[in-house]
Image (cartoon, rainbow, N blue to C red; front, side, top):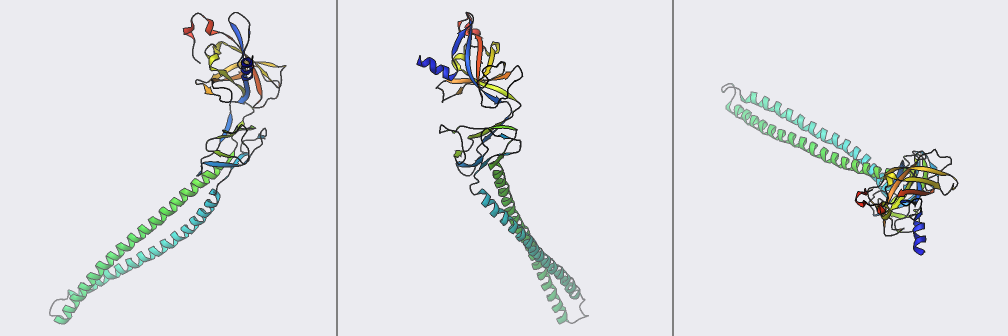
Length: 333
């Protein structure tokens, strides 16, 4: 008797038999939406993130409304520091461009002057012998050689100033680029920490992974944990779970479904199969067994207002494949 009651609570009890081979199995279902926005905890520089604010469960939010705010964990203050540093670095780059540009300009002017001096002293040193004294001739040659040496030094200095300008500016630009990438990453983190709804509909809070209660403001949760779901109000369906043992003896596609909402027990609807999961899921809060998720749609138009999370009693009428002669023809779900 105890085992029978337990199975009834889980919603997977065979309660009737209309013919020798037709049975009725009860499934527990809830109202869900095929279009929804599932909010999970974002990845941060810490292993946990705190929920600072979230929309009330059951409240109706519009697309674009804020639904969850996570603790920034110092990211906002770091972002402000980096943005201020970026402004400082931009000014430093401008000053560096002016200083290095001036140094290159001066080196270029010195090189041009050296070229002029070389040409001047070359002309003086090329005066034929006999027109000036040997002393003056030797003096001119020495000045020409000095000018050539000065030109070589001016060329080397010009190249050095150009290289310094390129290296220093590249170095500063790389620093600014790294800072810009860091700022962009921190801004993207802040955007993920403030989540806006992608659909219009009611809010449903998720269950905590460790505690037997729903996620609430002030809790610390790990990255990728479910926080809440916003379900679109225009695409309601029923999500039910079929025990793996029942799945082996039921042909879902050839079965019929009667849907009754607990909130409206006097009104029944005909259900149709939308999809069946190909892999069973563990439901540790129910038992150690696995269950297949069955999505059902409403055949008739709804006559009452419904909301996500409402419980649904699903009557599944089927033939028992296990008692048929050819059991090898049972198709997997």
